[in-house]
Length: 271
Image (cartoon, rainbow, N blue to C red; front, side, top):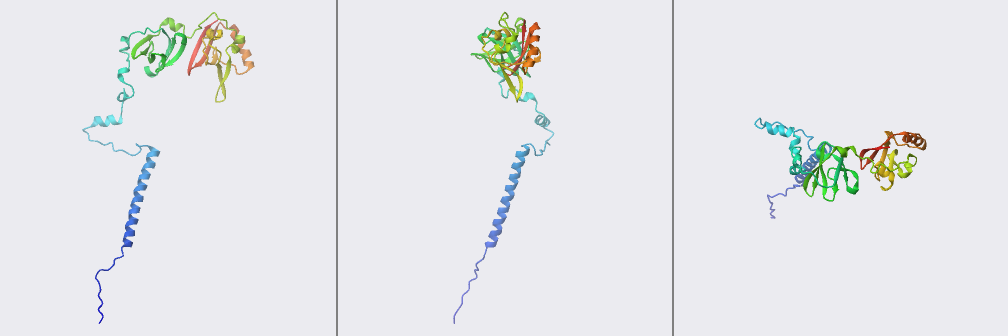
């Protein structure tokens, strides 16, 4: 008799269960990935603060809540510039007056003393417009601009230069008033070149050398862009120039409006 022996252990086919588990894991991973992707798109499109925030906080910290929602400008004072370098109106009176051979002819104050500009004459450089932070001489930098004075940082030492009445009266007046200015040859003498912006003629650039008599007589500098003469726009054609010349001959004064290093400057010249 042949005996058949059977085993109680049956092979269990678990592949369907594994497939279900794998599919479930993949679906979960895709769901998480989709959520993260949506968050990333939301962040890029609307920024970090687009999501609603719960501003409800315990009443025991009202000051913290107010500071978070209403930051003041004072909170950022000294964040990018050290407060030790700031000359306030209270302490500029104690600063010494500079002994550099500089003359202050005009100022243009900004929103604060560190955003203004000043017209300064520094030796052979003549009158130039300087913005705060620009170097005036090799060891002096314009540090602040006030209505009646400027602050100069000279090798780390702060000094002031005052706007004096006699200097203000001579703002951008001719360096050589006796030099002859011939209106008939003015355009040629100054070597004027048309200056365009976005295809529109707005003025004429001065390309003559600073040594030309007309340059010193009018207070012009090489690179100036003449925008107006006696309040009138520069002529854009020969006919307009012919109409302007008789007015220049009869005028007792000459006023030029120029753009110099990005600044609009008025030059007053007595005839």
